[in-house]
Length: 374
Image (cartoon, rainbow, N blue to C red; front, top):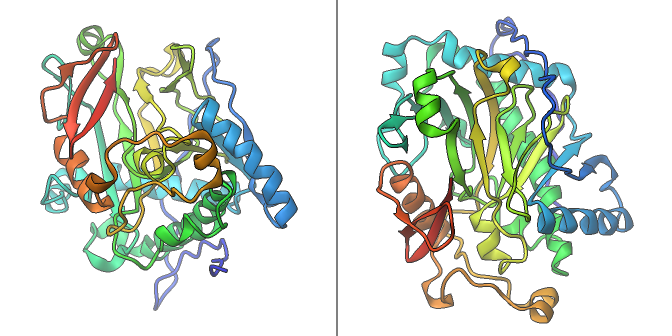
């Protein structure tokens, strides 16, 4: 079994105790009457026996096949620990100067590391995005970080370890059981120590002008799929995230205090033969009572090891019964590294072409059609 990392946040460096970060006060949740997606709530603390995992696997499988999203509760972090992470995320943007941010911008369009500044991606027409993020590979000490973050690197490292071992691996075991595979089948392709780009990401969406909202029909980030295997979003109260339901309607994702929002990405769809489809989601302008509030996000973006060939588990009894929905021919299956580099290099930078489906634009990445949903 994989070693379990205790969920402890320690505000210490190797040599000394440091003060807590300036505390972030989360805004109040919206009171607007929104149409929310009815997502399953998975209690991860129940995944402690084979019988309980088998039951949870059924719930997770159903959630992935109907919505592609579900909530996770009892994930091992207290509300205070979660608020500390959001406080560190906030200082990443509000305390670090623009000149210092420029020193820690990514040097390659194929790798999300360091700062992504606002106005990098084309949203619609001539309107560019208003989101900045700071991306950190889980191997946190492989690169330098801004001065304000350095005292909290042990905290962020503990956070990455906790996400990977205490949240991601248990979820991957449930997904493997849903395919009637050995529990470790997906875990083995998501080794914390291996080369890869599973990352902690802090993100802040900034309010836009009314002119930009009009031109983009209030869309802040077009409907898309994530290119990793699963994404862990630490729930926060400012609305904006929507998912495209099976009936073709966009529905909001509700905030639940100290819960996680989990969704499937491209790599999982590759590996699981389409049984767990990559989830279509977008970000839109927050509800009316939150429109002037920046939207702060904390994520753990999960990817298989870089050398993993994104080919289906053909030995899965479930796939043998139900069939495999392939995204490409087996001999053309990209590695995770190739898929990651192709997706990151093109996102928001290439001209999309109108697809066959209404409201869908397309591009080709590594020979695979990637869809963007308006």
